[in-house]
Amino acid sequence: MESPSGEADPYVSVAITAYNEAVRLPPSLERALPYLESRGYRYEVVGNDDGSADATAEVVRDFAQRYPGRVRLVQSAVNQGKGAGIRRAVLASRGQYLLFSDADFSTPIEELPRLLAALERGCDVAIGSRIQPNGVDMRTFSQPLYRRLFAQLFHRLADPLIVRGIKDTQSGFKAFRGAVARELFRDTHLSSIIFDVEVLYLAQRRGYRIAEVPVQWTNAGGSRMHVTLRHAVRVFYALQRIPWLHRHDAVVSRRPSVVTNPVEADHLTT
Image (cartoon, rainbow, N blue to C red; front, side, top):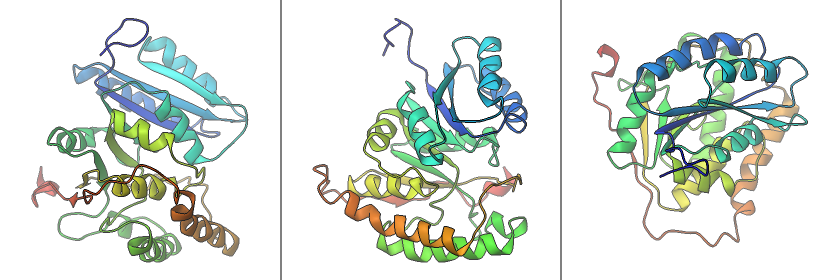
């Protein structure tokens, strides 16, 4: 497939969004871009600047000059939230496959082949799960207790009310068949940090095959998420709105969505 410019579309697109990340973003791209260069396939990185007040956009532009045709900047004039930012980057992508990642690459870019392998085996969505084959949750070792407790409560509400059978809905490292990603994100509404659940809700509703693939993860620190009562109420309110937002959707598959784990138990030793 070719883009409107006549060039072949990338094999993989990497979508990230950043808000006031002029300090943390450069080390992430300095690691990710040489790795992608080394893989030998066409790729693109689409970086969304979500209305930053610092030099985030300039950082992406600098990398676009260093990697012409492989790094692109999209922007919002105002801060709209992580969900809106990832949606903008995804919808600007052209890849056969698409990865969206947290800007700090808490899951290292070197884990990408595991997700692509799941997609190449026929899955539509591959989630980089922080829960390992032996049941160990990577967050246990480095994430603050209050964040872990909030995540556990969130998961108990999301499954089975919104999504079913997915252990790590909030992983910031997810890959899709490109056309599936653009279809799902086109139809989302949420702009907040729980946009992932809406995307997965639509994927299951439409009968897409989902794989959870255990990956390595570290708590990079610097998160702006602070769990307060007000924040929790807003998150849980948005969560229960998801089915209502899509009550009139015409696209509903009679084929049940399948959630699988295609990675062998020796993941941690590879």
